[in-house]
Amino acid sequence: MRLEVVVIPVADVDRAKDFYLALGWRLDADVTPDARFRAVQVTPPGSSASVVFGTSVTSQAPGSAQGLHLVVDDIGAAYAELTQLGAGPSEVFHHADTDVRVPGADPEHRGYGSFLSFSDPDGNGWVVMEIATGLPGREDSPARDADEERGSERYRHLPPRIALDDTIATQPATPRHDPDSGRDRDRDFLLHYAAGD
Image: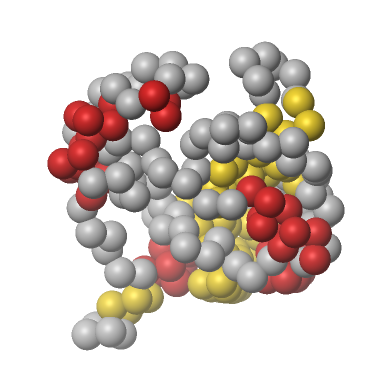
C-alpha cells in the first residue's frame, strides 16, 4: 500500500494552481467533467504522491490542511529556492529536543532534524524537513542495510520506529502513464472521483 493523493481545500482553484506550478510542481491533470466539479492534480518534484484541489473536491474549509510534510536533501537550498520562487518560507529551524522552534538547522544535520514551513495562498500549511538519509525501510535506504542502520547513532534522537515490512517500501512504483495502453492513471482517478464511484 502506498500513499497516492492528498486532497487540500482551496477557495480559488486557479490561484492555487498558479502557486504550485510556480514552485515547479508538475501539472498531472486539470479536469472539469461538468460545471459542478473541477479537479487539479499536481506533484512535487521527485514525489510519487500527488496533491489534488479543486471545486467540489472536499467539504473542508479552505486553508484547513496543516502539517503537510515535504522532504529535501538540503534545507538551506530549499529555503533559498522557496524564497526565490515567492513562497515566503519561514526561517530554518530545529527543535533541540524541545517543542519550541530553535532558529537554524540542526547543528549535526541529523536526518529528520531541520525544518522550515510555508503556506499556500489559502493558508494550507506545509513543513519542509531535511532528510539526507532516510530511516531503514524507506525507498532511499536499501532493505539489506536496514538492520545495521536501525541501531545507528544517526537516528538516536527519534522514537523507535514502527515495525513494517521493509520490502513494501522497495517495490517499484507503478507508472502514472502507461505508454502501452495510452492510459493516464491520474486522469482516470480524477474522472472516477468526479463520477462518485
